[in-house]
Length: 362
Image (tube, rainbow, N blue to C red):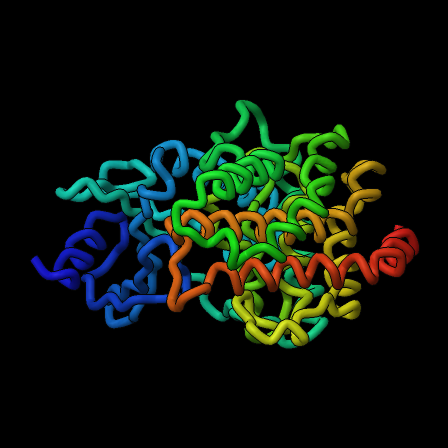
């Protein structure tokens, strides 16, 4: 059976009215395999999103789907009655057996969502207004999930943002030096150890556990095509217990610099203050109601912390021989590490100004 035939067979296993017409690869995600499936409903094409879950990364797909089912149901209930409420939350399409997922003959786990029409994801932010809208959407996402009833969500990737453990993994990679790259990364290793004190700050700050997204890249918010409003948060695989500041910190890490994550010209890597201001204002316009004083105090620090953590992860993978992240050239992970550490430096140079801004918003 060809890949196209297999996708067609899987699409028919979900409760979608009409005849299956076609499916094409969709989006720019790197973890799961995603298709846009089209069904003919009385002559009207209706789109759905079909995804094969990467069980190499998400080793307990049933627990993952239980999280997503609970989170989307809670969000839908909270948004009920709001304008365009059906487009503000991802809607799972049940499989024909009533479950939130389908397992094919080869043991692959699949899920389906209704397609959110009239909205788009952007791989790169184009304006401060877009940054504001995305941060507002993520802030609202956290706020609405603050009241999610027990039990606690499953940890889909345990210790995902446990920075001290990430640093320990770096130390182990340095000691083993299995790829013989230690000498090539001396400046980066020195930078990591000089900033090691960053690693434990958020975990030691006695911040409350929240329901968090944990992958708040700009392209994980759909913006309304007509109004530009941050409409719907997507890519819910890593929604699990965490610190609210993991999400804000990752927004700062991924949205404030104009450079690509693997940029070799480090002069292009900078924390743009106007972008940070847009993120802070957007996020606090929704999340400011429920965040504690301690969380707000560490808001600026969280950007530096998450950038440092990601740099440490890239550096450890480089020293281990590129075993986790896909690479497309020699030194790719080292280049990625350097951009993160340069962003840490840029944040440090502007930290006082960023703190003053956050205090003024409060």
